Amino acid sequence: MTSADRARPARKAAATREAILRSAQAAFTRGGYDGVGVREIAEGAGVTAMLVNRYFGSKERLFAEAVEVTFATPTLLTDDATSLSRDVAKALTSSDGRSVNGFLLMLRSVSNPRAVEILRDAINRHFRRRLAALLPGERVEERAALFLSVIAGFQLMHNVVGDSALANAGERLERLFRVLTEADGQGVPE
Image (cartoon, rainbow, N blue to C red; front, side, top):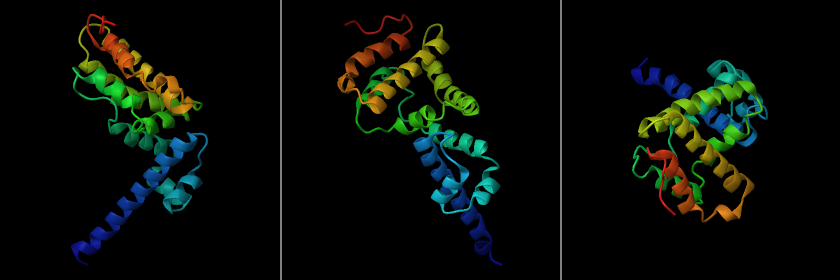
């Protein structure tokens, strides 16, 4: 057996795992943790539920990995503290929806206490701690949590509820974010 022959099963296994994970991300985003079963995820990946369990062990572990993959790619937060407020406000008010999937996965899964624990841990690792490290001044953890809360509230009202009054709120949103990101808390004057 050649090394190429030995590599084929490993590539197939990786592709199968990736297909399951993509299906899980889409399903959890669409239906939340409690609204999706392993069979539905398996069907979306073109595999059996038994194979899903073989690769991930449980629905909970699959959800944790789907959350991890979804949150690992930054869509809103940048590492540039000087343009953070502007960049996030602009991204939230744009119509491209690039950050909506992670939000919907979170929103639709909050009825399950274990899913909330998984989400809280991922949010803290991927967003809050990273944001707090960028902020000058005191009470950075609190300010980072408030910043993320504003993002979540805006996404709920703009992307889910569809409040059209928010479509042109970019400048005000940027000022609000600056109040939270600047050390003195003054933000940008009106």
